[in-house]
Image (cartoon, rainbow, N blue to C red; front, side, top):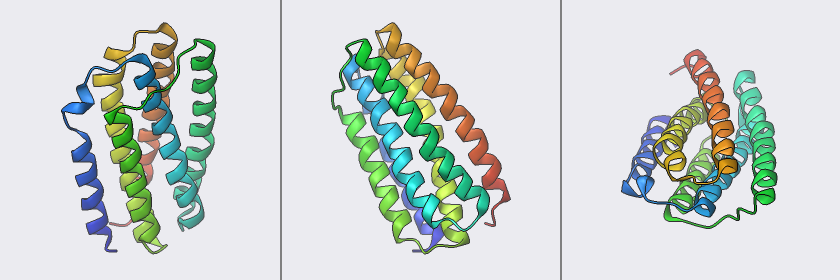
Length: 175
């Protein structure tokens, strides 16, 4: 699949995510599920890129995604369980999960090489920007629990760091 078409398809998926459902009223369990699927999506995409990327910086970034989002997921799950906050599906969590699955499928279909590396990093920049917006505009305003707000603050900090690193790598890759 041509990298340009892959990038366009990913942007269309992200645009579809930016619907009014992003700003819907969510319960704490629904916010918790968005945290869960966001982390799991990053792990899923990172595992694929870790095995398929040809650029060392992209492989290292993908490995970092797997390690850090696994750790963040485990910590969030532990904190939320101690606070007795379960996870519950919402249209937003289903949408984020479906978009990550679609992006993973598109990346899987892309041949390994510089085009894959670029497509993965483009996806990471777009996805991290999107999640930051969801955290700021939807999750934090809806979170009632102090524990959940702390989980979101930790997640936001991690996502922001990943976005900065993804942008740095993205600038080094051929267009």
